[in-house]
Image (cartoon, rainbow, N blue to C red; front, side, top):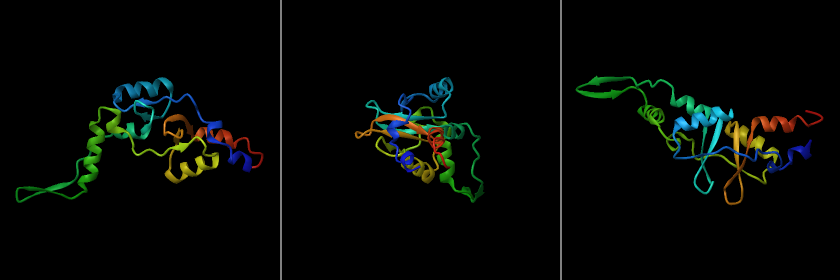
Length: 159
């Protein structure tokens, strides 16, 4: 069992990673994700450094109905009864037109020298479904998903 858990991520990661530029439109991102049947895309700069990630959760948030905070009019002014900062965050996400405006950052990544156990621990700790894998220069070289981890764990003789 320990041998599999010590297996390097670079041995089982997906190497042909579909990534998107941070200036891409959300419409094009949707088309890309739909075409390839993927639920998350690393966001990279021109040198392929990972600068963010967009997941299905980010996209769903983008299309949720905005609820304005409860407020009252008091002496000619508006007094908010709810936290306005949450509304402002959701408004920004709702109005986003480019990937940069919607992506999650900073993004949690794994080094290609990380192990399967590192990937499991990182995903569990941060409640993630996928982890971009970077080289020593922090450039995108792969991605590991929960499905990849389950596949690796299926090789264990005793679970």
